[in-house]
Length: 255
Length: 220
Image 1 (spheres, each protein chain N blue to C red):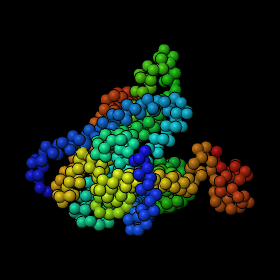
Image 2 (image 1 turned 135 degrees about the vertical axis):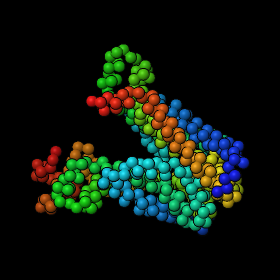
Image 3 (image 1 turned 90 degrees about the vertical axis):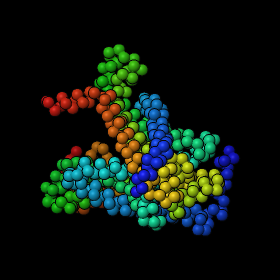
């Protein structure tokens, strides 16, 4: 009980919520490292996964590459980079981006690859160019798996960003490292709890985003489809027109 | 790279490697032993499932470093006790495998279960000799993910002074000694690849029927 009390006391101490070592500052630092790494990871993994998924060539390479990256120990990589290029934001972002790439790559690749072939054929049959097939048909249909990959990547990066403090950076890891060096367990545990709470909040927020951006047609298992947009505009709009087909369109939709 | 450093410190490196193997694989075994009955329960009872699966999801969300630090407060152990790492990683393994086991058991064709029942198998024996073996491929897939991620997570523990090969990273950092860091990374990656290959082979050995299916499919 006394340990929990001490940790709680540390967390609610107003002096820990202000200044350059305060919780808000550390939160922004933590988010800054995580966000930069995720951005780098997305820029690398999503186009690569989409391209390989679209062409169907190189799937074996993608799986091997992702698994290879997954087996790299992050702390070792971070320290290696710091010893090679010196302390800076680059080693932190690279080491964390390496964590973000495998789930993003696997999610994008699997998402694009698993789009119903008849949907892709229909898009080609309508005269779409390859670029439009990928951007307007395959990627929107791949969103559930792609966002699943993004959630996994974000969670891992946010959780691991604490190791940036080991090479003299900030973030919530600072409390863990500093607490350890002065044998201040409440400070260490508070840092750990802050990381965990941040991870849980971000996970819940991304689950909400996923629900909001994924097309309702992909969520309904019964294959409920919306009428094509050009027909849709001729129909009187009801407030929920986006969610369900108007009754008179039912015959047009494939069951 | 100072190659001579490696043989001169062979005993140290092997000791760290042994520690790493123990810290990453003991939790896999503990997690497996706990996850099979829990997964069975989650598959049998709707109530158990609605409690176990979301709990596993939340546990899996908690970062490993956090568990390494918070567990001493809960268990009353010292912060540098390796038990913390074993318990933390066992929690992850269980969280990951409960879902695998429950899904794998749910995927056993109901006709197979009915046939076993009709042949006079009692529920316990039916589970041991029919349902569980059929769930092994999914279980092995879960085990591979758990093992590889445990091997990579153990080294994070080095940040707080625990961590097998991870201590080669922190030691190399403090002494600005690249060779030690690279040795740790290479051994850690090799260990992960080896463990993955062993599990893959083991999975093939214990499910001979899946190979028979594959070859029969080819010849047909």
